[in-house]
Image (cartoon, rainbow, N blue to C red; front, side, top):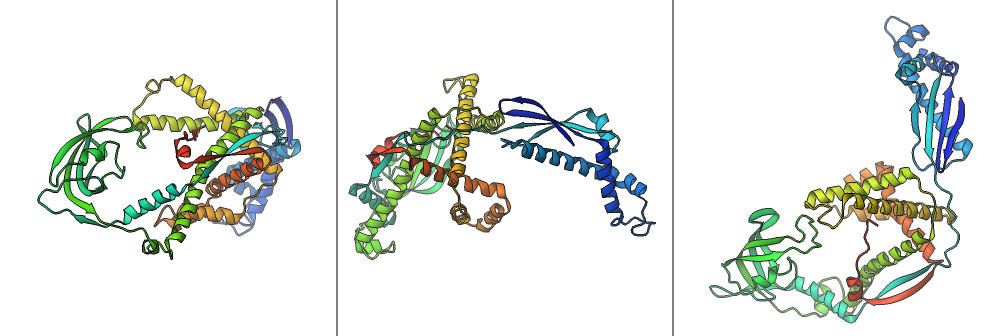
Length: 453
C-alpha cells in the first residue's frame, strides 16, 4: 500500500492511497482458500470445491470485504504514521469511477482513492490564574423558607363546599371550571378543560385569568379576555390575545391549617424545626443550581474572549446544522418569521454561525483542559446520573435503562455534561473567583443565559 500526502492546508489534510492489484489479488486468494475448507456446495465434497468455482460464486462479495479492509487499514496508517488527532470521520473518494471499481472488484486493477481528514487544532491552554470570574452566592432568607412552607401548606389545605344557592367566588377559594379557549374566534389545541380545579390567587393560570373569575357565582358562565405572555412555553400561543368561555361548576372555601409540629410530621419530620431546616437546604440547592448557570456563563464568556485558534469547519457545520434545524422547527411550530423577530434569514444565519463557532471553540478548549488535567468521570457517576434521568419517566424505567446500557453513544450523552462540569470546576479552582451575594428575588430577576449561545 502506497500512501502519499497530496495537500495540507490549515487543519485539512488529503492523502492519495494506492493498493496494487497484486496485493488485492493475494488477499482475495487467501480468503478464497480459507473459505474453501468451510463452504458447502451441492455436488462437491467438503474441502474439494475448486477455487475457481468459489471465485465465481463469492469473488465479488469477498473482494468487497477486502476493499473495505484496505480502506480501514489506510485510515489507521494515515492516523498513526502522521500522529493525527481527527476532528471527524475521514472522507473517502474513489478515483476512476465505476469502471475502475469493477476492475478492482475483479482484482484486475489497482485500488486508488483519496482520504480527506480534518484535524483538531493545537491549543495552548496555559494557566487560568488571571481569569476573573464573579460567582453568585444566594443568601436564603427566613421569608423564603416561610413562603415555600406556606405553598406546601396550601397544597395540603382542606376545602369545603360553600353553602347557599349561588356561592360567590373569592380569592383563596377552590373552584371547579369548564372552559373553552379561542383565538380569533376559533378553539385552539390544549385550550379546553372540564372539571378543572383552580385555587383563585395561586397564579396557576394565565395572568389576568384568575382575577376575572373572582365574583362569579356557582353555575354562572362568562367570557373572559386574556393575553398569553410573550415568553409563554408554547411558542405558537406566546403574545396571542385569547377569549375563554368559562363556567363555574363548584366553589369551595379554604379551611384552617396550622403550620406546626403536626404539620411537619405529614412530611416525615419529627418537628417543625427539622422540617424548616430541610426546606432551607432544598431551597439553597435549588437556587445554587440557578446561580451556577450564571457563574458558568460568566466563565465561558471570559474563556471565549481569551482563546483564538483555527476551528475544524466540519465540526462547525455540524453544530450550525443542529442549531438551525431547531430554529426552523421552532418557527414552523410558532408560525413566526424572521421579519417578525426584527431580523432577516441572512442575518440570523450569521448570528447562529457565530454561536456554532463559539460552541465548538469552547468545547474543544474544555476537552483539552480536561485531558491535560486528567479529569475523569467514573462509571458510578454516570450510573447515578442515568438513574436520575430515567426516574423522570415513570413506567419506562427498564426500557430506558436497557436503551442507554446498549447504546454507548446515548450513554456518552449522559457522561459528557458530567465531564464538562468537572472541567468547569477545575478551571474555577485556578481562576480569580469573587463571590457576589444576592437574594432569591435578585437571582430570579436576572435574565437566564441563552442556552443556544
